[in-house]
Length: 312
Image 1 (cartoon, rainbow, N blue to C red):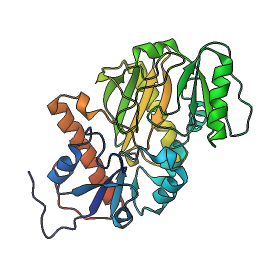
Image 2 (cartoon, one colour):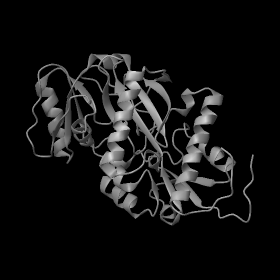
Image 3 (spheres, helix red, strand yellow):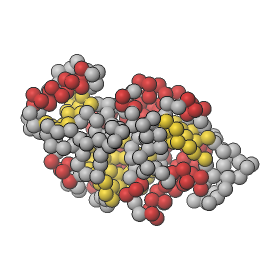
Image 4 (cartoon, one colour):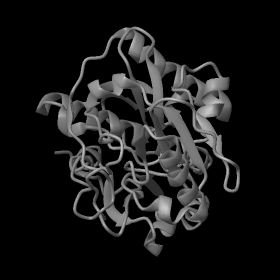
């Protein structure tokens, strides 16, 4: 382990969790060691801890209650002096209406209709998924074969002040979603997320804190056509916000389908699980190292250096 030099500036770095899971679910457990190996000191704090506002850099990682406290969370994000991912991207990505932006940018997206609060919801024929436009961990998402039940669920979400998305159910989801992970704008690794939503009329099973639905994860080796969808999504974001790819410290692109007509289901830029635990030890350490290098590069961009020279 490389020890920090006393004559070098050591920025205060926070990995932001939430009160229910202040250090996440354990998937990111190796990040503090990876950062320390590069002489960077980081600690976990709930995002609403006032100390986050005095940190030199805050990295959003497990802020999984933000959907219930959206205005407060976005106000906090805008108040953090240096945030990764950047606050403007967090705000855009927090509402799944971004799917329409990606579609218009040419990314192949699962067909999606958006209905604002108070807008009449139209449910197409066949099985559908109804979910809140601002949501995480599958909370509020359900499958329906009965249009009246789907509309009733949508109305309940709208009555609670939440906009709604309606998507046709794609049976390929039975094979799971492919989660493509990008670190500092580059392809890193992938894993499979087993089907989360149970059959129509049933609700997902949530972990003990109720923060997110239980998931079945496994390693994946996606086809090039699937990775291409991920790259299209990353490129669309960098063009939209006029940033370089490396300014996205992390991204997860969830895709359904294989090499034939893969479709983006979600683009996660706020607080995605990155599936480090799905990698073997060597690959996990390499991915965590690249994450730490991405943080180091971000600090340099923010002018929080110079740091001592370290080989990569």
